[in-house]
Image (cartoon, rainbow, N blue to C red):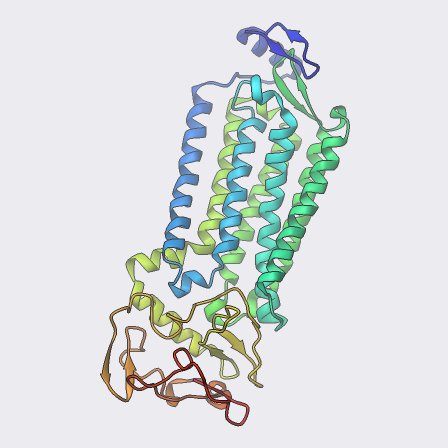
Length: 409
């Protein structure tokens, strides 16, 4: 079988043993051709991404489970897809395949898949942490429109970076060497790519530090610190590999190690974000949601949460002392059907005309009683007990005007 260089000229294919001998003597390493070990690595890592995909799909199937919904599944899904495409780029970039046929397009695998989606992965995590900081620390809204704009900006910046590297001469970035059947990556390109990753995750670290004071129900500081520790460990390993083992893609153990490290780190980050509520929804579904709502109601005496919904898709809106919404149509929408009831309490019944008993009540206590609400919730909202067949804000087509400037539930 012959191979072709990028100019389309036919080149005789180098013998496998000769290739190993030439590469070993030229670079002073123990070179190894792709073999069954690489294939097994690809299969195992693909299985790990498959398990994570199952978790993400399960989360979407249980989207109305409030602790899961509060994690922002749209962003988590985008983070997962970027990690998956990053892994696909690693297959070609780390030398797990013979560099023939489609694999000779080295810039596609290294720049447009591996580098691009490695950056997108980091950037999406930054946007997600920024959304939490903006809503809970800055007390500003983070709307669907704002999230879309942030996503588009992330993509444009990273695409422009990769486009510049695509247009730069191959001698300065990535080049295909047909005589040796390998993708040659310059050390300058690697260092620049690595420095950009450090900068992105340093910015992420600043945002993580700012998340430490968020109220308990939404506080992801511990998970975020764990994410940061994982990524710093990965960046350290990548720095050592790229600088000290410049030709790691030609060494079997080194390239397998790099792919496995990237796979473990990227999947751990996704599991740290939504793994806990997913597991709780399976094993302690009712109890965990009840405690989650209880913590939400008791976060702070100066904080209240409006468990209502509006036409623009607000979930529970964080209220300040003046009753103003801090979310202002955020994208955490519980929806009208489950704004009061749990998603697992579809067949709830009225125990008596004066109270609504559901599985989401706190150990039989009436969740509408003033004694069970934070002070600010009692002062900002006028709570009214729902009775059987009485009009509510959801089924009354002509709700009355708020009394004294207060919202009525």
